[in-house]
Structures are given as C-alpha cells and as structure tokens.
Length: 232
Image (cartoon, rainbow, N blue to C red):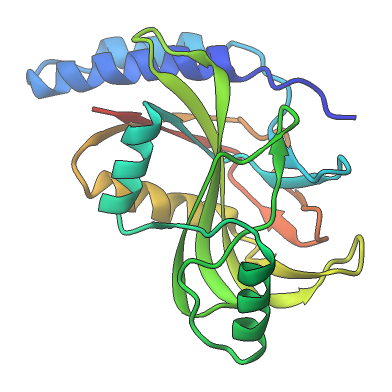
C-alpha cells in the first residue's frame, strides 16, 4: 500500500526561498541569505520519494519539482522543446506498438501511467530521438499544497527510455530506462533553464538510496538530489 507523500512543505519553502534568492541576485546583492535558508530547509523530514504502479509496485524515482500554475508548466515545457504525450487510447497504443516494432518516429507517443498519492500523472512530456523506442520523457503530478506565493506544487520523474523490452516484474512489454537518471534530470533542468524564465534550487539527499530498481526491473543510480524549478 502506498504511503502518503510528505515532501510538499519542504518544496514549498524551497520555492519561496528560490524566488527570494532570484530577486536578490537580480538586484546584484549577496546570496548568503539564500545559502543560510537552504541549510534550514534541509533539516526537514520527508517520506515518499517514488512513483508507483497501479498495483503499488515502486516505479521511477521522483527527481524534479516545479512551482507554478499548470499554464506556467505547459508554457515552460513548450519553450524548452518538450512536447506533451498523447493520452493512452486503443489508437495511440496501436500506433506506438507499430512504430516501436518498425523503429519509426512517434513524437507524441503515450507513456504508461504511474501514480503519486494514488493518482496518475497530470502531465507527461517528451522529446523523441527519431525512434518510438527511444525518448527523453518526464511525468508530473500536482500536489494538494501551494507555496508561499499561492502557486501549485508539482513533483516529477524524468527518465530516458532507451529501448523496448519485457518488464521483469509482470512480463508485459515496456520501455526500459537508462540507469543514470541524473543525466535525464540534468538535461531537463538545462533545457528549462535555457528559457531564462525559471530559478533553480536543489534539495540534497532527497532520495534515501543512491541506487535501486523501478517497476520494470530496470536499475537506476542517482546522486539523490531533487531539482526544484520555480517559475518567474
């Protein structure tokens, strides 16, 4: 059974300090207040750090968070060059199956559903690599809480699909991910940062372990950090 997610307060505080830090930096002042604030934020406790399958199997680790409205998120991802994934329907499922078997392009291919707090992702974005079996992609889930500025909080899981195979847990066809999930997180952070419309902060030691396996049985390794993206 899934445990409730308890990371939102920490993210909310970090979002608030990220916005304050951005204002200080724009004014050309010292960022020592920001560094001090972060040291206090890191003392807060949190519980769940993973997404889950519908049957409760731990899925991809959460490695990115966003502070802003749904419109902010959609606009940011579009400007960063990431497109929304199609919804899962019989037509899109058939399309991705054929495209994968024939190694054809499907830039808007659907992603499977993973869950946080018992609900599936609100948004999924991707960048295909010329073949439906390989893509950069990220899921985002909206939390129930808001930051100090009244903006919604989101958590996400960014991973790099590198091929189609069989899940090690249920034997169903699935995408397999690259083990280095930090590389995918950092690529996404770099893409959104290039838009010039965000502030970036980090939570150290967010993941409890530096390696593990997702629901498909794929190994992952991580520096355990969570990137927090705050909309300007």
